[in-house]
Amino acid sequence: MNADAEDAEAAPAPSTEPKKKKRKKRAAADVAPGTAGARAAAVAKRDDFAADWPAHPELVTLLAAFDAGNYALVRERGRALLAEKGASEAGAYRGVPLDARVRACIADLLRRIEPDRTAVILLGIALLLMTVLAWFYWTHPHGE
Image 1: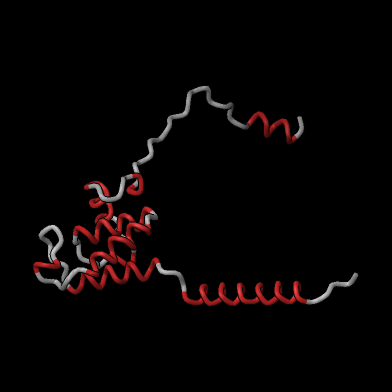
Image 2 (image 1 turned 180 degrees about the horizontal axis):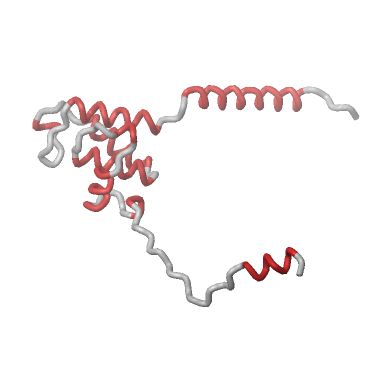
């Protein structure tokens, strides 16, 4: 016998039993933003930057939308909340006042979804360069 035949005999035979499927736990991202389940999941698992933020109901909703990638909702509700009058009763949302700390957290969340200033500048330079090159191409004669 050679070494290959011995290795083949030593290998275990494939099992005929069906493999058990493992159930996957439902991820917090599968829960629709704005629901009670989304709020509870967002409080339980917060991002590193939001670990010490207060548990305000609107802030939790904004964080759930942020985690789900719904930046339009974050931008719309966040700007509306910041536009409200101060932290007095007129600025309260659903009976929970918006204090200065909650407003600072909302402003930080809005800052995180804004485009990077460097990327905007580089995009502007690229568009300007493309415009100048197109203008130069169209205004100068080509070799005929």
